[in-house]
Amino acid sequence: QVQLVESGGRLVQAGGSLRLSCAASGRTFSSYVMGWFRQAIGKEREFVAAISWSGGSRYYADSVKGRFTISRDNAKNTVYLQMDSLKPEDTAVYYCAADTNPASVYYTYEYDYWGQGTQVTVSS
Image (cartoon, rainbow, N blue to C red; front, side):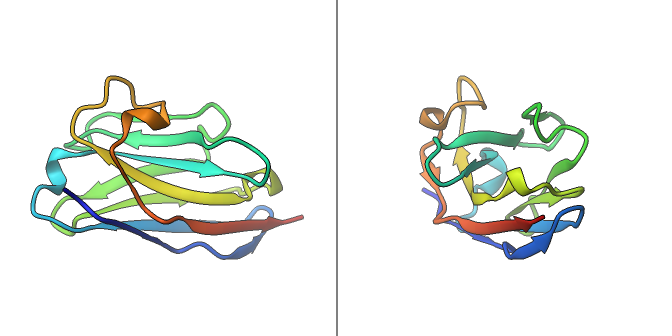
């Protein structure tokens, strides 16, 4: 089992940058595929990015490709989401998620573990 705690969300102006962190408990962090999802008010939770156990494979939603970068540090049990060129439409609560072997990294129901989320607000 793993517990996830996100941090780093705040208010930022359009065009700015933020780095979100997700710290995981447990000694088997490197066994988990990690994902970032987001949920804006009135919308469903959507996929943002995911990274494989070793970090060798990364996946992005089209809406963030080229602007966001996912990475992980298995020695620190932490996954990151570097967000650049932020837009007002990136405003949402951002969640990290973990699963040992998701059939697909893109769907919320494939992940067993979730953090509580961190709010990102991008002003225009």
